[in-house]
Length: 419
Ligand code: UDP
Image (tube, rainbow, N blue to C red):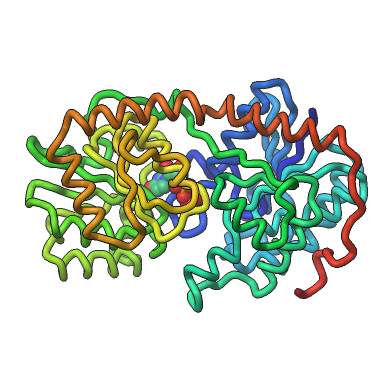
């Protein structure tokens, strides 16, 4: 099939470098891996993403069968994700022109603004469209309240999109409930998780020299890997560390490049907390760690802590599991599906440092159990979440929508209508 993916802010080309900053994370990784796996299965993929650099060519061949198309929409420089909505009319017009010349068999939009741009362009040509939100505005608003800087119309657009596209792919079961609450008919949703590269993230030797932070003998190392934004719960892990014996340390990957750590406000906030609870000497900020070095980091850890206040899917626990490491995870969103409590790690309530500390202490006190969890995590990652398997699930949905009639475009949903 000819598959057009739209990923307006998250370029798959950024996935091998530049992750961990405020706006670059799981979507970049997931779009890249899905495109590569679909191409391996014989499909032809074009990923349309906004041009954020004047120097990159319009079209870049990423791999055999995968082209990245840089769409001119707004200034050709990095913009905050929340400012991109103003440029979705231009993005949509460009997609429409492009697809008139090269009409795809199916369109797959990633994130709400991609859907906003893609829907009118796809419908004008009668091309079926599948939507993955990756994150929902209604959930973000509930958790972040006044700190949510998303455009005001986001929730209304997501609800309209859910009612208009051919299929909504939810990345976890919890998301289906959220979609139904938004008015999306349950029969228009299919749960298809994200995956993990089980050939890259593998168990193995525990050395991690890439950043010079070798683990000392006898140390119980906890790893945290995430964009450094407050909802990721790194503060909860720091508070938990203060309740653990002095041989436990925390390494924190994510945020700016290492040379920018001292200027980062979130790092400053977390360092102040570490000082306040008396663990400043046991928390090590690494800055953004490249995807290539991450398997070694996971392997060097005795446990990986992922305790966000909410999480639409969460690639990090899967990466840790694929590396054979036990995970202490908040039982929220996708983490409730991927981490199996008492089998591949421990579930804890979100925002509860005492529960995180107790779960980590159980792993510290019983290394055999921790190793058993790690082995079970690897098995689960391989059997349930390999990208070939996840790509096959996408293929099934693409085939279903391509063979069904395409409904007419809801007139309420055009890129220009303020909601
Ligand atoms: N990541 C990385 N280096 C870092 C921090 C994060 O490569 O320093 C990657 C991480 O390995 C994962 C992605 O960024 O693949 C984060 O995805 P996740 O779904 O966990 O969270 P999101 O960023 O989408 O909220």
